[in-house]
Length: 91
Image (tube, rainbow, N blue to C red):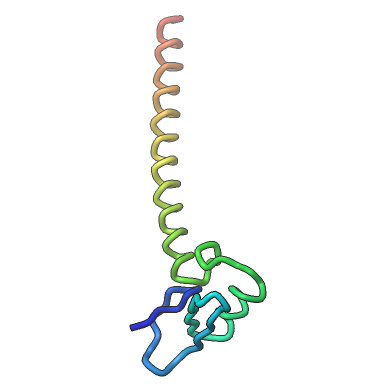
């Protein structure tokens, strides 16, 4: 089963568009929207939000952000504890 070269969606047999470059590279597209985005507008599927490639990339980013936010929370918590200890020592 073929997949779209731009958005990575599966193609049914007999559906979609096939584009062949002069050097023999074959691109399969599920729609004219994908074809125009890759060939005419020179976009990359992994950087486009509405593609399944883009969704995978976004999910990886969100996991990294979650890790960073958890790390940031830990650091803030440690700083607060240090400030509290300093206040107790001054009393």
